[in-house]
Length: 224
Image (tube, rainbow, N blue to C red; front, side, top):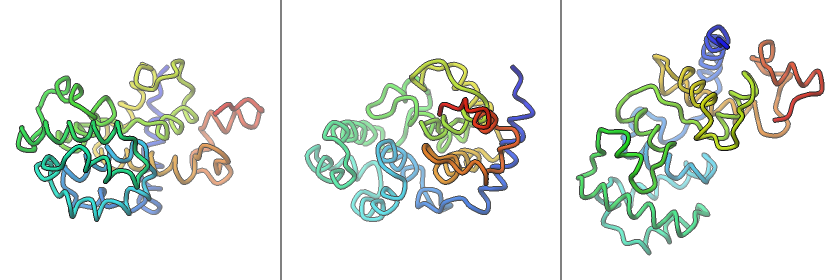
């Protein structure tokens, strides 16, 4: 199915919405370095954005670069991440990533396949690496972005977001935009503030005229 018109509609409307309602986070500021943006995405995988935003200043004061983070011990990082509720295993993985990047003097490899195999990375953080460091259109596709896209366009078939070809391709098409950062953040913020998991604000939604979820809701068929 060709979603071209709906994609353009979604991009246009959400970018206009984002200019007025987008959230202000430390890692979104113009002064944010690639290190700040990548480390933020690492922390955001299991923690609310508002919590990470409060945590970052003290974390960055202690660890302002990959080299400084690589000087930390494994036990130290596990303890530092405890206020975020992150598991010991995630602390260990971050330690391994910091050690690897310290060896590389804070520079990521240029090949996606190599980056994706590094500790802590995986598909999502590698997408963030492509977006922030390589400046390539790449989706920050998590459960929140997936929810917005599925409600608007239609549902995926596979349980795992990472392996669903329909959702992966759709997310890539939508974020293939000249405002690559803003379109990603717009979708994420819209999912957090309007198209929420429970009790979404459908009646106030600027997308409802073309939204599958809203249409099915009127028929009593919506499932997400």
